[in-house]
Image (cartoon, rainbow, N blue to C red):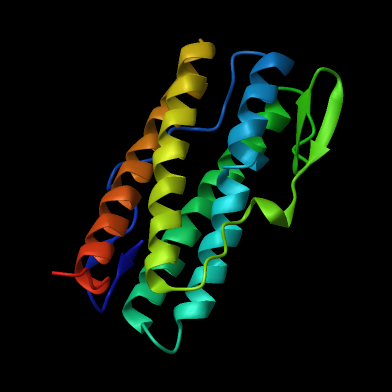
Length: 176
């Protein structure tokens, strides 16, 4: 995704691996459900970033646009994870499973915020946690197809973290 006005890419310029798995594996699917629709997840990121985009639309259109572009990349990640979860034999509902119980995604997972500083603080933190959680998933999953996809998603998340930090440095006024 290249923004024509600023020539900034919001995803790493590398292809995404094919969406495939070695075989059905509900344990792997349940690990991915956390990245897909857990508290800090692709689903939460899309909702949080779109909300922040709307809130900044009038007062800070450049940041609003950047956050919106990042949200679209996160939506692509959500789609890839949903397809993986299906291939692994599970239902990609917006839930996680713990000890045979299902917990549905909740809008309370979104860090809404009230100011540009809070929005960017929350978005930076979301990317830090997403990267950590994807690395944790890498340690638990040995299917090379899934590993390649997660590694590729992490590259985008690292780019998003860099962009959010740059936006923070440029637009958030810090006391001198």
